[in-house]
Structures are given as C-alpha cells and as structure tokens.
Amino acid sequence: MASLRPDPGEGGPLRLLWLIDSLTLGGAEALVGRFARALDPRRVRLHVAFLKRIAGNPFEAELRSQGVPLVGIGARNLRDVSALRRIVRLIREERFDLVHAHLTDAAIFGALAARLTGTPLVATLHVRPPCGPAWSRPVVRDRIMGALLDRFASAVVCVSRALRDTYLGTGRIRPEKLVVVHNGVDVASFEEATRRRDEHRRHLGLGPEARAILAVSVLRPGKGLEDLLQALPTVVAAVPESVLLVAGDGPLRDRLQVEADELGLGRGVRWLGFRRDVPALLAASDLFVLPSHEDAFPTVLLEAMAAGLPVVATDVGGVPEIMEAPAIGRLVPRGSPEALGRSIVELLGQPGTREAMGRAARSRARTLFSTQAWIGRLEAVYARARADQATGFAASGRRA
Image (cartoon, rainbow, N blue to C red; front, side, top):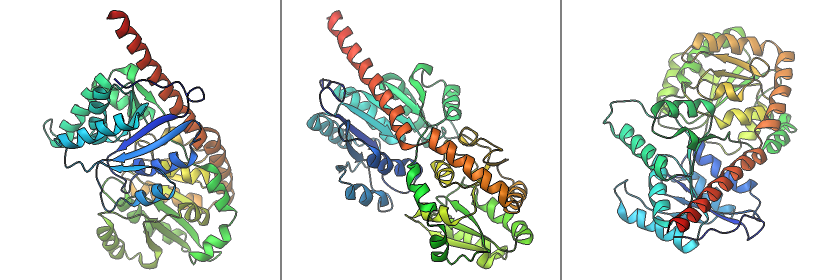
C-alpha cells in the first residue's frame, strides 16, 4: 500500500488528486478552478484527473492556464476496466497522499482505485440522489456509489445540511461518514468588480434608469428559467425599465428563447450565453434571481451575495442555509411564477431596501463563505481522513 506522508508543514505539501467526471459547464466543475486559485502551494500540491471530455470541457483551458497538472482518463463507461487501471497507475506513479472525488462516476472509480492503492479517499456529493424506478440507470449508479463510499471512503462531504439529510434518508452511507462542508467563493474579486459598476453597465448598454435582473444558470431542466420568464410580464408591467439578463447556455436555450418570444418579452430579455465575466455582470445588476426547482448548494448564490446583490430565490435544497431571509432577500416557493414576480417587483421598487440587503449579503458571504473558509474546512476533512488511514494501518500492523 502507498505510504502516508507527514502532514503539510512537516514533510512537504499534501499531494492531492481531484478526480471528477468532466470539466464541462456546471457548479461542481467550476469549483476546481476556484480551489486551485486559492490554494497555498506550500500546503497542497494539486493534480486534476477527469474521466471524459463533455462539450469541449470549457474549464480545462482555465486550469491549464493556472499551471494545474491535468490528466484525461478517457473512460468510456463505468465498466471500463482499462480506465480504472489508468487511475490506479496515476495514483501510484504520482504517490498521491489523498484522492478527492467529485460526482457519481468519479466517486465510483475513485473508491475502487483508492482501495486498490491504499490511498485515503474523500468524495463530495453535489446533488440529490436521482429519482426514478429502482432499476433505472441513474438510481443503480447512485446505489453503487453509496455502497462503495460507505465501505471505502474516509469521509463523504455533503455541500449542504439539506443534502446530508437526504442521503441519511437513503440509509446507504453511515451517518458518521457524512460531513457538511459549504463551498466558498473569492469574495474579494466580486467586491472589486462592484467598484467599476458604471463601467460594466455601460459595456452592457444599460442606461442609468435600467433595472437589471440577473440569472446565471446552465439552461437545463430543473433550473426554473421557464418560471422566471412567465413572471417577467408582471415585472415589466410594474417596472417598465426592468430587463432580464440571462447568463449561461445549455440544452434548453432554444426552447426558452421561443417561450420568451411567445410571451412578447422582446428586448426585455437578453441572452448572454456562457460568460467568464460573471463578477462584472453581477456588479452591473440590481437584483439576482435563482428560480431553481432543486439546488443542493448553488455557488452562484454565494457569488451574488459577495457582489452585494439582494436575492430572490426559491426555497429549495441548501438555499435557505445560504440566505438569511428576509435580511438579504426573499425566499419563494419553487414553481411559482406569481410569487417570483411579486418579490421581484417589491424589491425593484425599494432601492433603500435593496442597498441594505446587499450590504448584509456581502457581510454574510465574507464571514461564512469565503474561499479561505471553504479550504480550511476541506483541509480539516483531509487531515481527519489521513489520520484515520494512519490509525487503520497501525491497527493492521498490531493485528498482524
């Protein structure tokens, strides 16, 4: 089995492998670059391995520009034994101290590879277990993942208390293995962008009278963008100078654009596509809206708070844990365009309330959801995983 290195600061930096399904658009995928930028290289040496390329893996270029070592595994499916062998060989050749797996397939491969190499494994659960028939492919994959993580993972991270409660309800993973670690964002970068608010608004063609409502989302089922579009006629009728900015792309884009046209929204909606300047978009906006039907822990909500924006969001998943409503925004039922519209109109009509909410949101993000706080929480999990592994080795030696 692979030997354990001393803790960072005693025997050099922790050699860490992040294993993830892909580097395509998505919340879990976006975390990799944020983690890499904030790391102290004296404490952690990061490598990233991805199972496959999906839609060009847009985050791959960002990581390469940061100098993060990347390895494509080229896994065809979960039955790809050669992919497992490549992961095992990578762990042994690079002598990683710990593997951190993200998303279902990576967690399955990571659990098996960690077992074969004797390397501590931490896995992060980012989304709720899938619904459907017991023998549907997504449900079977999730059951396999749960069984392997329960047996071989040192710790299983849930990104919110709500997600932990959901997995506790499945009974697949022992409670003592499930820990909550809230994600974080680079608060300073969003604060800096707000200092150039006027410049960012001019760049987007927003006049001083415009009331910009921003939604940042992958355009896929479950994100609730159709509810926001249905709410917009009410908003425009009450606040004619309002405009919805939609940043993101995905399989539902064409359908959503058709729906916007059918609702007669015209120039009231601007489709910005996938953007890498989200801090600038947030700085230029007056209100952030998250209409998701389900979201375990939407990092984009943390970004909006760091930018000092009031929020209207659906009361789902980990959203209530992030928001301190009503101090920083409004929580509404999911799937309710009427409630969305009422809350948006209310806040657009109260500039003083928006400003106070924005200040409270930024303070909460700075205190609880910074990248430094997030990495500190993860490093504590890593330390515990390595200590548990060392204890296991010592116990094995005594039994022998």
